[in-house]
Image (tube, rainbow, N blue to C red):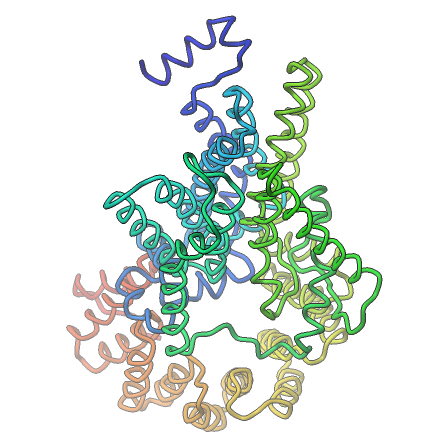
Length: 621
């Protein structure tokens, strides 16, 4: 009997309706549909925030060839970048494809949460009644699907790292169940599969380092399917291969010098942990009452133990004690608390630039979702699933779904996102600076200047906004103001700093806009000799030589640009025009073909290539 036939039989049977046993396949399809409905309006959102440098401006995801070419520079998250390269291969930079993959991954995770919940319930003894177990499992999946705190992970393309790593980690936990129940060669096969999943998670996001702890948690908190509970030594021995793989991955990353950058962190480790103690209360609030969602909340560094940090520390102590006490009598409660704490521990213990991020809750939400799903199902059973109990459950899901849809609208564009963030974090500089950039892109220049002024008044040390404001001043022809901003950056930063190179590049751009070619050339040539070379430096050098009629030097500069940044179409286009003007048509066609390979949707390149191949003269500029 097919799943559809079983479902029809269930619908037509009063006895089946009374037991409430829905075929598992139908329940899985239902929660998948729920996930897509909740995030349907996110599919047409723009690329925002870190999407710009992770996706839009990242030459390393411009197709599979570009991915492998740039792999040494993106080795810290290669599998994640591979998925972005696949997106680019099939859809270019159209945001729809990136959002569609994110929603599909979320739907997959929703199903995995349902399956994991059924395993937990079966082992904890709370799912003795099949009806209760199924309802609790898929209620948990439904909660996970529509909880508004998940929107940052799903609607934000760059947060695919959270989605994909969660997929691999959930699968690794499910496979670990299989490994524990198997024997001999079958057990070894499951272990190999689990290690492969763990490796894939590590190749996606650093949070994967929590996987061994989650495996030990499932082993210790839940009774085995058969036999007595294993001793601690056996549990630790079971994750030894994962720890060896983790150590190997960490060693490779350190050798490639792609560790997490912490150059912007100026507070002490003690201050970090003290601040994070208070942040835990915010995480709990977001799980229970997902209101006032904010992509960039203002969290002050706690340099002393205030009541807020003490309350957070007390909560952590109580949560750990509760998980230990509940381990024997209520293992589901123990594992739910433990999962939440373990999933958030790495980003709380390791100093990062941001104290809190809602996307970090994505993996952590698994434990609370399953616990709440079981609690709702248990209460429903006690009320015999009366109309009021069923209506209350549906109302909760509908309330969360409406909140998710509303939050997706905020993530739909940079302007709506940063307008919302500034309203919620008015005293933090970064939201104002990002809003200024969004306003400038929207053509609201006066408002953009005002937002830049506000950001720099709040935090003058955010020199990237001095550079951005200078760029906007240059665009509108206010060259003296632009140079004043840039000279302040140059005076305050080390000479080989990345931002110093960007500031010098903008100084050259100002002189180029003023048609002072000699001064612009001197700036760009000096910048080219720096340790941190701006990607467009050699393009500008070549452009100046081109404008001065020195095609040989222009060709030399454009060749250097192509050599350094092959996956930047601008260098290929510029070189093609030089080749065309010097009579090397075949070389020009080759370079235009390379440019089209990098940017398949560039109509100007496609038209130029068609003109040359048709034998018509090409307009050079």
